Length: 395
Image 1 (cartoon, rainbow, N blue to C red):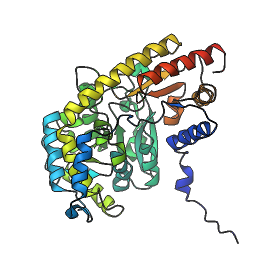
Image 2 (tube, helix red, strand yellow):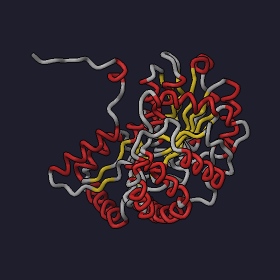
Image 3 (spheres, rainbow, N blue to C red):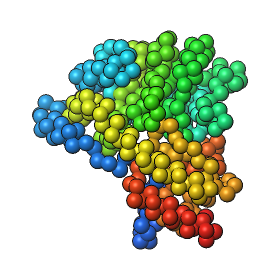
């Protein structure tokens, strides 16, 4: 007799996870023998630096690191985080009460609504956005309220226009600058208005700063905590994934006032057992050396960006260079409107994986995202393939 257990309504309400679907389509093409060029998932193509790997080899051999991590995380790692925040942003935090190691920032972001959102409450979510802002809210029984990010507004949410009845139900607002998928950055004036507004309406700001070290201008991306009063109303998420090419290592951290950090810790302590201590100790060395490493990788990504943007322009994309992140987010060419169909045709006709903008939210329709985690020879080849299939009318 077949056993069938029906999925929960919360799980049913989730859309298919974007990058899982992209990977499945990519694997189907690979099985057909297609040489796929992958501009899809934002996973650095360069290896984790050797000094990090060496530190991990040493830490992993120490039996003292083989036990359950402490719930609050390794004290030395938390102290290293505070040193890094002071050096990078000029910020002062308590390593004992205001820093929490995470199994990657994604985990902390997805768990945050469980600490503050009751069933029926709302979280204010940018559209397009990194999917866990929505899914974390839904898993907590909350309702995402979508804030369209419009190109004409610099891909910044117009939070001042949110209706009063929505604000009464809202507990969290998610912001992400430098932004995935758009590559936009936020000026100081945006954060100043946001902090005042959040304090007025008693809404927690969840600032996702995973791409703080991937930028191309002279001005470094801001931390929200550089704004006076932000610590009263915000929590910020950081990741070593992009900063140090450590996507597979799953380590990041949250910073914020003690009450917010404590609430997130209580959620996590009931769900996971923390970051492997050897990885936390390795992350100390990663943070110490991150500034020089990021400078080198940003030179690499900028060269790739300039090459890809120039080529896409020649193909008819109305593309603008991204200011930060390793994503190029552009409207579709030739007045095309269906980003899913465009990416499907691009994969089938040219063996190129790109991410449909609608996968990040309805406001992302008519856009497509390309990552810069592809080597220059492959970028040249991809542009050549696109030109051929465009000329043949296959895309």
